[in-house]
Image 1 (cartoon, rainbow over the protein chains, first blue to last red):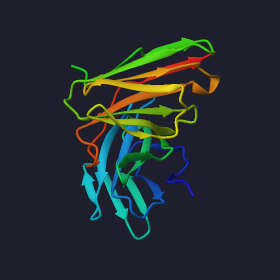
Image 2: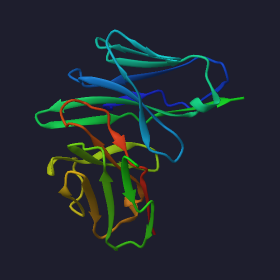
Image 3: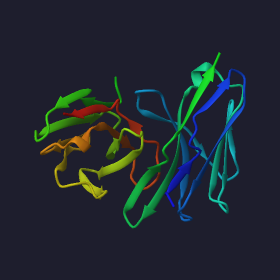
Length: 112
Length: 114
């Protein structure tokens, strides 16, 4: 099982749609969770952290279920500018081996 | 006022050559990283350095040698380039190693080995 698995996508949605991405992780000891966003031919940038209680940032809502080892991202009222690849990211530490592990990403295209 | 910068942005070279990529961060961070993003867009960590000390080497071939002259710089030298080395290489930095701080990525270096 891959360390971080995401919906393969791609997702094509019209402006204004609500879209949800799912992600699962294999290491039950994983400590922190994030969604990063990567625009075409650009670097990844942090979109938001994911907390156990769930958290919201404007149109974006992230959820974490530690028991199921499952993370989600919901985007409401999609905008054209939301078109990007969304990367599910997990932080692990083993000894001094602290690192982020990235999922393969889910490509979202929002159409006019 | 770029936070994490890399040079060059594009690198096209022949198999067997040796090349270097430079990275600098002006954020005052303690930790720097190199990632490789292959043609399938899979982003994977290669190395991490904390206060100039190597922390992670993710089974990267010996042909790849990172060097950190100071906390603000982490360069990557690649010997005897192979076709499979073609990828986008991202440098990143974060405040600390152990606290899952936000990582800030450079713009990437697109390496093509012919």
